[in-house]
Image (cartoon, rainbow, N blue to C red; front, side):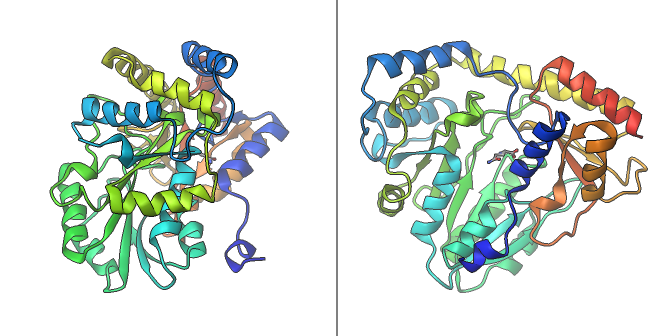
Length: 380
Ligand code: GLN
């Protein structure tokens, strides 16, 4: 077996969801909504399945979806992309894999900011890269110029930025984005921006893409996900956007990973991206209400909740809650003892410098959230 995989377990999300399925526990672990998806999106995918072709679409994606992505970003984030700069992928995870395979050569160093999504590190290693970690700490999870500079060497080629950040639900501030952009320009790095949570933002916060900062247009790969925007995680439709020299490299890697993505889903997503602003506002308002419900309920039960400005996640600080368990032990115990599944935030770190924060997923029905709150209140 390849050494990267030999030392690896199963991803924490699958592990915890399997546990929830086996035990019947309430799953506040892996991030996925409980409902099937927006009915009109499902209908659009079903109609396209019956009425349109099920044969290979073009390798870089249906022209209609590539244009819809470019138009969408022009409308919502004032960025000017051409459809040729958009490559459709089978989910953001494929986009991340393709980008790392395309842009990292053996021995290249890659700056990863932890907490990090658990796919990044093994993929960097599989591409032959060497990870240089920048560690963020609660409660602010702030990126500093000093920490970033300390991780960069003459061998650094790439930096991965996930904002809004899973698992913390924090968003890089404009000052932090400037720090990252300045470092990329000064050291001639490519930024790989995992922006799958760009639309799931709360309290009037709006996502600012790194690609829009001075000097970043030619050196950024911007990754998005229909699964998160439209609450259809199983569709695995994503995309990566970059200027032509980068896009050419990305397309070469993509062609031998998945080659194409189911065309009916691409049609439905193209249609979805054209929806009016109100649709996106309503989606955000809906998840914000769920965030507030879980946050208020767990706070009332004595859990010290950390703020969440975006994503489907909110975290509790166990130490500040007076719970003398580390995050892994807490998550192991609440399955049999409370009937709830959550995710230990230390699994988003390469080592475990932070072991007192637990992530809960709130994109669930009120009934599920209330039952979860009640069970977690009893556990205390
Ligand atoms: N993004 C999801 C989460 O953070 C997990 C996706 C997956 O399991 N591949 O929960």
